[in-house]
Length: 167
Image 1: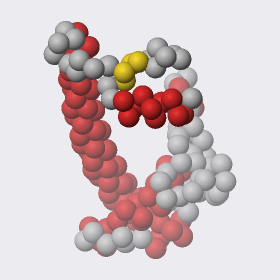
Image 2: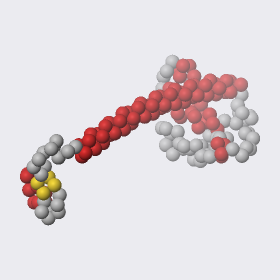
Image 3: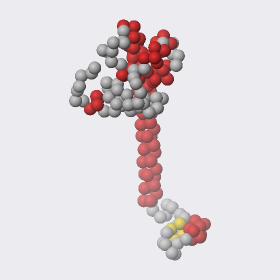
Image 4: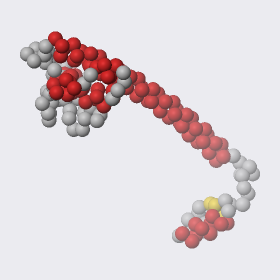
């Protein structure tokens, strides 16, 4: 078993794994909230060689992550062959998680860049609006139509009439 440490990382709940549903791991020691883990039958069915060839990698690795976390190395059922297979599957799972992390970081960076472009666009539009507001009356239209009931100004008579109809 894992030693008891007073770290928030060891006692905090992990979020559910994608594709697993409501199953979540409550502690790093691997004690599940809703199922008995590790699922030795599932681990026995999986072939590391098929994963090496790229067959059903994502779903398989997501499905075995809770079982990998729940394995107790002191378990009497854990013989050398199971341990070897578990280690290889763990390597694949870590590789999968690292690749997923890289993809998510690239997506985040792209979204950050897009956000900065949009912010620049907004700044430019605000600057244009401020310039138009500060321009002298001779630069803009000379005819302004004023609403007698609310003192709002309109650029065209049609806008004023629409406004008065709505009131």
